[in-house]
Image (cartoon, rainbow, N blue to C red; front, top):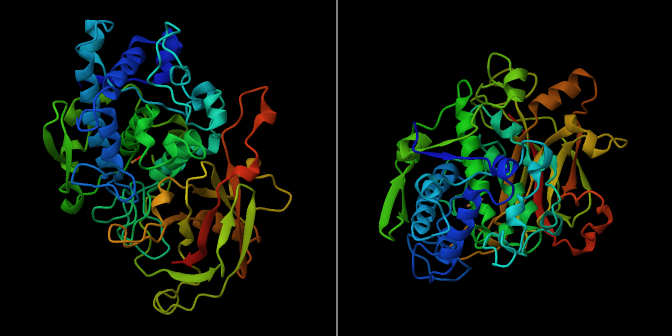
Length: 490
Ligand code: C2O
């Protein structure tokens, strides 16, 4: 039995309203941490700096450390939350307004935005400017959020779905040009953004993780940027949910964590609740039980269990052991500014010796869409769903069969920083495995081997019911630039 149970924030609200004692205790503890100075490692400001500091600000082994676009994404954030949760619990000890039971048992709630009903909207306690007394400033509140989310609107269902991520068969795949990287992120060394040449987000980091950041933050909001996201108190509940999804993924047949010591042994620096430096590695946090907590709900979703063949949702075959080949790509960058956009990519017959001569295979075993060199000044908040060969008369919202993944922009402000600290500066990369869709279209005689289209369709939070016309005007969307969209065969 774990000592601490992390509970669903919407379940707390459903039980006792917005100010369940666990939620209220969190708000009060956040207030305590916000009152501490930036030099105190247990302060709110310092904890955000652990994730990221502004460009050019001094760094050490404790700040500007968040791991993204790498297989360290999940263990690093698990350790980060673990020490943060202990800091919150420690901050509660001096508070008279919090009962002894809550002090003894407090654990970080999680925000499962994918449970249907109202759960895709921000829990009420985060949207109220004041605490339950109607007077005291609410530390969970900020104005720096997407305007629909701030008013109680919901994240788009596509943005919050973990189905694609949970269907991944492998935690990390060996890096290949244009290929996908698995559930947990690309195999890299220490990687804050894209220092490593092979940096790319795993399926869970893509959706829902990155989309929820942009969806909640909107343009210019706290959750949209690397250096500001943890300043929004919902950040920690979002990450508790991402952490919970790692547990769910492992519950499925055949899923396992990496066994390489280059993953499990990499050490990361943090501070404990007393401000004392501590170091921890993935090996110490492979399972939450190792560090004393469990989740209220961590079962494999029925949807996946029911639709599964042989107990797992998707084939768990690794990709074939041969190189990929680029068979077509856009020849100029695509700039997205909030509207739907489409690119047509002419495909050449594969000529790679590895593809045809060596194996004698008439067709590629895998087909990937690779979206790379994604750059922009700031996260526009909204994300784009990507569709392959979407028919002209089809509305993207009802065309799930053609949906292959989502492109979003958490961290994009770092993509232009080309200097010593960011020698890469080459931007984000997303890859999607479209093999199943291609095979299906081929069987129906609808696959054109000479041409493919990719449609990017905007995903933005929905306005609250009855306030539909108040949506963000499209002209205010900061542009993002996609360097190249390529099709790879393997
Ligand atoms: Cu390191 Cu969701 O962020």
